[in-house]
Length: 637
Image 1 (cartoon, rainbow, N blue to C red):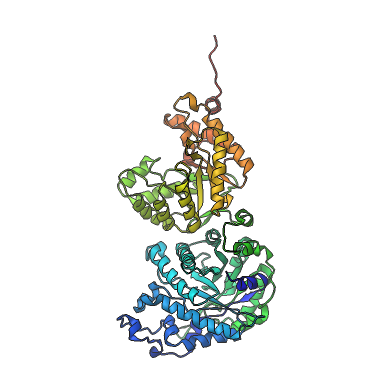
Image 2 (image 1 turned 60 degrees about the vertical axis):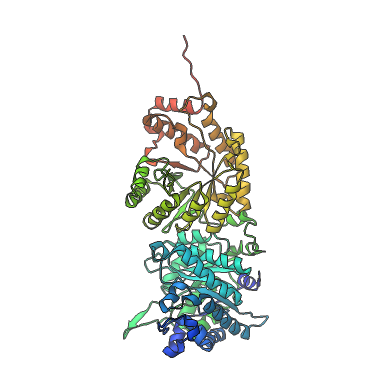
């Protein structure tokens, strides 16, 4: 991978260009300027007037001249004229078949412009940039497959044209961001051309992204993808409104930060939106962002002109940064593109350690509790869920999930595996609903790799996959871990190997070591791994399992001492399987308290049915504790 851009990024502040659309509008173009030869139109008779991407083929000199004006103003980075270069946008003009051709032309135009002014002392860089399109996948307006495919096509055209980096910009939907990142990775794999990948989301005046996403959720998801070199915000507002978001990124991002505001908030005059922020005002804001928050890349979005970029470049261009913490992972992340290298060292810098949904971030470590994983959204453990699934009552299933969230669950374990039903279909339908209507993250519970992949393509944010083990020798585990790496997910790993469930603490720890070797080999950080030490029921009376609780508790204690960054998780109710409901509630509660004392960090439970030890009669609690610890009391004469 070429390192010139990364070297520059690590050494000094880089300046982006400004708005392409503003300059095209100022060029006074008419409908004939957008026309393409009939041979390219594939029979379409739709006017291309307003399709700025068509100008890459019809008037390349106009686009190149715009690039040159920004370069002459001092821009280090110029974005290709490909904001709408997806089949979704181009289909509005009947030219969706030209995605790759238009992208390639745009890349070549920008490459010529940058090369014309580059010098060894001052190289200029081309960023292949594609925007969000016009349809949101989380709202069901398009599909994951369409997004991944069209962004892959566009990025292939840009990579083959010689761009220095790829940019996904103005993102409004985290699921879209995930699909486009996967599309960019695929484009690099198919071409064999590796380039840095930048992502920018758009924060509205409401304080969230368009669909209600908090910035912490966006950053948490993005940092699950080591391929993303830099992260930032652009569009929607001016720099004054971006200050709190820039501050948040400065305190929490381990990646270089980019900030590209509009030229202030638009003001309507005579039916037109005007941007009135002056060049000096924009430069002043960027000086603060660079000085106080260590921002590495600055520029402009809607309404910004070459004059704005000249003022920014004169003020902060080439300045060394003050954000050394942001470079912890950059150099070795991109050394040979081996993203599995030094994963835990990189992860140690993360501030947002946890998972996320479309809407919010959920830390794994809870200040006054453990990570509560709701178990009632599971066909294997909830009759209510199973009955609603049989009726295909998706609204009822969603309401059940919302009830669990309301009861205090931090994450929901969702499983639709049920005899006679299509698990993949059920998960796609249900998770699409939960993605939109539930605030907490999802734990995908399935034994089938195809179901897990379908689920990962349906959920925004950073979910958790439940689970892997070595029951089959590891083939399935390898496949699932590859999916977690591809889609940015955490993993639950069960202490099961070819000999079955590990029964003793020693065996549980040995299998856990083997599981961690596998997760680390796939680049998953220890803090994104949940080891389930499992337990057998104490309700059978089987002599073989009398110490099942003791062995599980001891395994948790040993694992936490040996690998403190690793999470531990447990399906608590397994300890009481076969007993009556009242006895189960007491035994589950006592067992959970004992496991928490040993270092358990998370549990799959029906939280409203867990009792504090102070609410259990002391003699009843003693009986449960004796059962868990295999303390036998015999009647004496």
